Length: 91
Image (cartoon, rainbow, N blue to C red; front, side, top):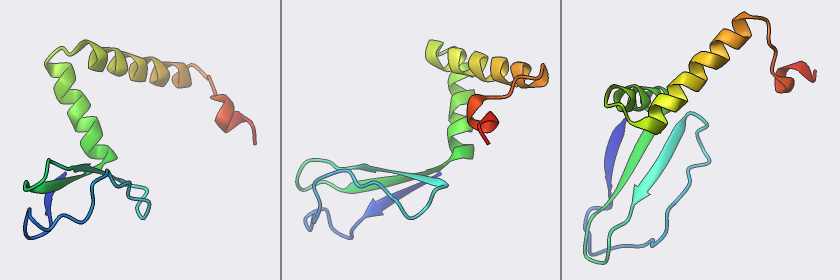
């Protein structure tokens, strides 16, 4: 996970919207654009980073993260029992 400052000066803003990075399938790019005369930042996340964040939220007992973790466990158990998702089964 990397936090990058965009641009050298907060006074030379060239973009006012969130940008989606289409170049890399493994990195999610999130831009935090503040009001005028503030610094802009970009947060680059990999899927491993997202999984680590979910684990941290589960540790804090965040209800949505706990449900997501339970759904992941249920999916693993279903595959072990022989379930094949339709997306994989359609070939």
